[in-house]
Length: 572
Image (cartoon, one colour):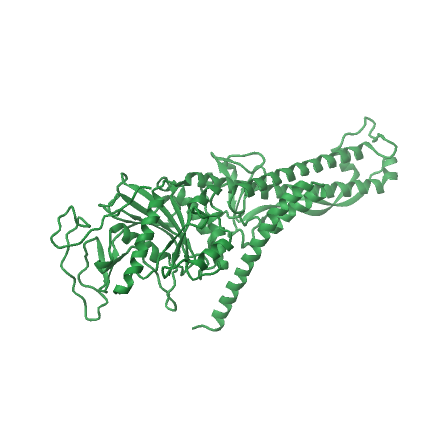
């Protein structure tokens, strides 16, 4: 593997414009107020503002700040330096639990790229953390993309920082984060990813419930090819073998990149870069430099994963999910129609003597009707909106339908090239409506008469229904024919749902948790009724995985509720 050396720039006052770390001139040392908190002078050799005299001196990099248009202002873009598209750019996705050290790692990567050395007694940060009054905890609410262009460096870095999963804003925000990532990857500047770094503390001997949740949430965005790009950033390391952290990773059976010894690929850091640098800290600094050397060499292997494929996979996943839920609605409708026809047939058998005498009679049945009702907020849907087809009268995208604006449903996940992939008629997006109401099939008790059945089914020329067999009239045979047809349609719908669910489970690292164990059991129980033993066995494998995930997730929800309750009862 080719060696990769980052230039180390010394910031001497007599350096030329070419050899200095920045094209900006170096200002005289800044003066400080007596309290030492707010500098009067602001500039360093880089385009940065001095925010703490140290030692080491702490600078805030001056960045150009925008929102990425494709993300509906849900993703921030902070750029340092002059953009150079001729440079080799490496894209890194950083994920990890709040407090794991993601922010420190992002700043460490930036300092390494800028050539900052231990002896320089300075440190630069590109991030800005919001602090609560009660605790020093990251509360970033938006995804932030940090772009770093250092003129003298042959490569540039794009670091995607995800918000702290499982933080005080709760679990009901995580699907929004995943959707924002998907929208980010639809931007032409982010059609590939070189590495997904999972940040974990060296002292951890098991992954927490929150960390399991992070992996489930993020990995559900990708196809299985992303495994070779997943590596671990192990923080707060003392330089020794990270036995506890590696044991936790292996116990959790995380699919990731592994070395020739089948160990998870990992890099060690100590997170002390901003502290006063004594000689005893030099070994820790050098450990971080060596880790960064190895990490960047890995990035240069060109293992990038095309995120456009990821976007396509994610959109296909959403479409398949919507189709499965649409099939579930259809199956429910067919079952209600079967019950309705059974009730009609029972009424005919009970009044056979009146039919023989050509007498009319009335009876009551539970008639299948479809109505549009208001959507109640559901935790797993994360919204109370749905996109419905006004022609087919079907729900085309219900769960998670919150992102797309009301005025342009062509961008809805259910749509492809302006047409719906879900509804029966595959109608254009202009025939769809997004709102807080959806179609629901239910029953309504109504009175019917035998004369109504006569108008619906063919009669003999003399107005009497002749007997086609000893005990059945023509109308009964027609009803039973309809009944068998509906049962066959239901069976076809079940098979379609089975094939779609198995396709998802085989082509994704994880199964999206919109498919709750209750939803899967709906299909399993009906396949079992039809004697589909192989299909039942396959579905149960998926069901067990989802059930195990839901149990972990439910525990996290109750823990969160408990923490909120205690916080309200015993405020600080």
